[in-house]
Length: 198
Image (cartoon, rainbow, N blue to C red; front, side):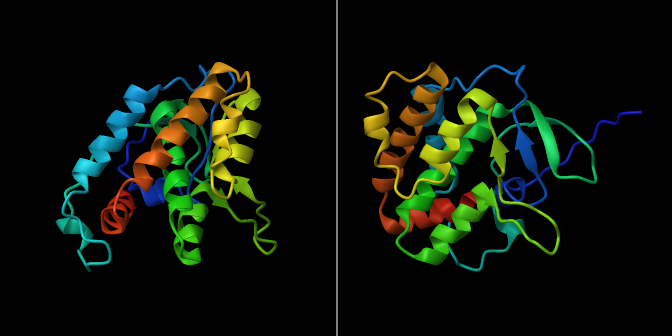
């Protein structure tokens, strides 16, 4: 018999090997526009105000920011889960993580944020490379190639000149917006926000 479980998880755990999210084909496509994306960014920026990256702050002293619920159909023993509710926030968080990833010069920082977006395969455990979030079939290839795996995201302005389906256009527009917002932060503020999110 199915059971309902509720747990709180930090973002670094949501985007880890513990979870592999898929958006079922019956779910609506990605639809957040600039207003919702801006609100999420500004909320996270405000919540991270005063947070010191690498300052040795214990997790108990960090004021948590509740990002909202994600409802999954998922067996407890496996990472794979279908996202029933929370797709828009989860996808926009992935866009923000991508924008943060490309903002770093340091390869270790890039790798840290890259690992939040992809699980690297391991021949000994039998796992394969995979995205931590898989969108609906018709949008996933665009999402993976142009946002999650792209080295700098600068090409998205060109992509937006093409006739894209609405979900892909929103993915590209919101990524361009978030990349610009992250690039507009001074390094200390960006690093504090990045550390706070994790």
